[in-house]
Image 1 (cartoon, rainbow, N blue to C red):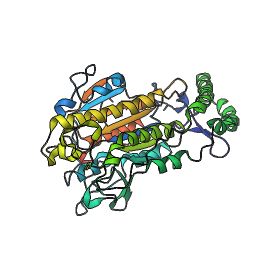
Image 2 (image 1 turned 90 degrees about the horizontal axis):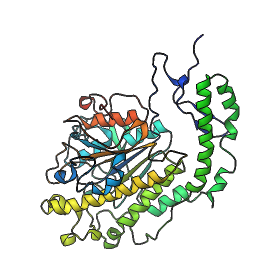
Image 3 (image 1 turned 60 degrees about the vertical axis):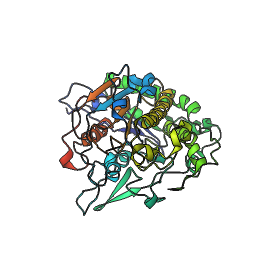
Image 4 (image 1 turned 30 degrees about the horizontal axis):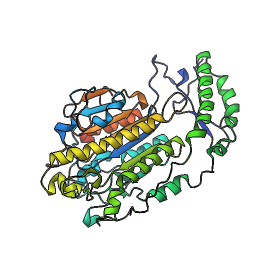
Length: 432
């Protein structure tokens, strides 16, 4: 008799849109395999910071010590994978724009129809993970010639549209984003969960259980107990984050300088991160991107008390590369990364945290601010989704970052071996 098999993406469906994801079961395993794979990551986050880094102050000597720039992440080092030696080989084109295009697409910048564009990783994973993406940006669109308009200077998200890239603009207004995400949630999140989400699927459960072996029945019972526990947890976690006063912040200034908006960047950035975490906790999205700027970075950072107070781009190269000031800037971004990861780790999903079920990718459009080189890119991964193991430094010695994009897809349950321009792909990175 042919053994009963389930697709690893199978769910139990009830009335309306109610669906319960299943745990890994032996019935999902191919007949020839005797080992269970790690469950795919359920969530993906990409965080972009502009300008690259100061590599000698970013590269850690060990995961225990980290480095000057990564020091704020030290309490979370067990959840980090520091990636070294990856080259963004597909970043072919204008020195800033090509890196923005390639970072999540793995494609060359369009030049005379030479590139074969595809959707960016966030757009692809929104289909894989089954929720619309949440794109956000802080102090965005500062490149003068492209102010207020999506352009390869500004954008990391792209949709495939025939033979061209379709550039996607992130959400810029924090208040509008808050209202869109949380404005319709009832006061008191308990009302969202008045009726158990399991009630609508129990008949399907009984039918499935009768076809499973004893071990799988026990796994499914434990999983449903966990879902009930999660319902109770979400009563306290699925609530709108506090909305601070951000009235001084003008989200669509583009290239215009504005001291009040620049000073509000830390508050607005924290709000964006809080909304990201809560949107994932409430199952409003499984994929999010956060841009701390566009590639031009034409804004000041007054809270850092930098000499002269010029825009970040000044310290990158326009005023002559200032390694000390750039180190200070990059270290501040690391502190923001640490906040995001700590908030994700604090969300308890019934014995596992939001971070445990996620993969978070931190990166930039270049390695060196002074030379715009794209070798040995400053990339970090965090989380435990898909079996990602933290507390490590991995050196891939010149491999293409396209292989990293393939690996991220694999961690999220997509089995492809090529992503972006095929000439820059050799398969998933070993050891992730």
